[in-house]
Image 1 (cartoon, rainbow, N blue to C red):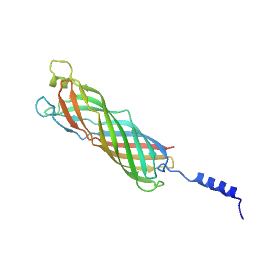
Image 2: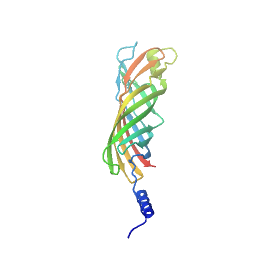
Image 3: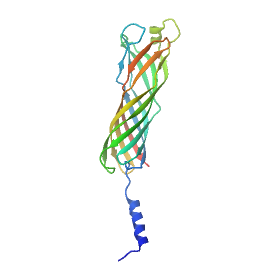
Image 4: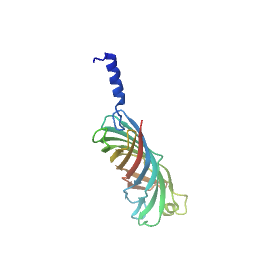
Length: 222
């Protein structure tokens, strides 16, 4: 039996529309949401113009986060994390170890990462490696009474600010496809970040932060 050309074309269109689309296929967009835990790997210098070996530590934080993904190809994904920032306590270390908090700050990382996803778009599980840049903005810094007592006893409260910095980020993770729309994703990201804290008294301290970021999210493809 010979079918008219228009019937063959219609059948081809229907067949194409019935082909399943996958969350990691070229041209697809997705959103995800979950939690991120940040643990800095602190390497602190000494506070200038003070007693020797005045160093600091930086606390961890966990926050709700999201992400936008765009598959430029079946293997290259552009990943943009979303969040409202993290809060970190800055504690005394060195000769001040055990004395408690000397300051606090909020940090907002603005990051774009290119991920290379292994295996094919329809694979149930796809590991990936990624690299990109992060601009980390520090804001709402506050010094504590301990910091004032150390640097400006009897005077006005000592203020503090941290330099916002651009830093490289490296990522490893994986995506598990639950179905054609939903997926689970987990990742570890290392950012090579160093900053300088400046006190209102003019003293400075250089701090290597190099945060470790662990993220687990549930995602949906559009």
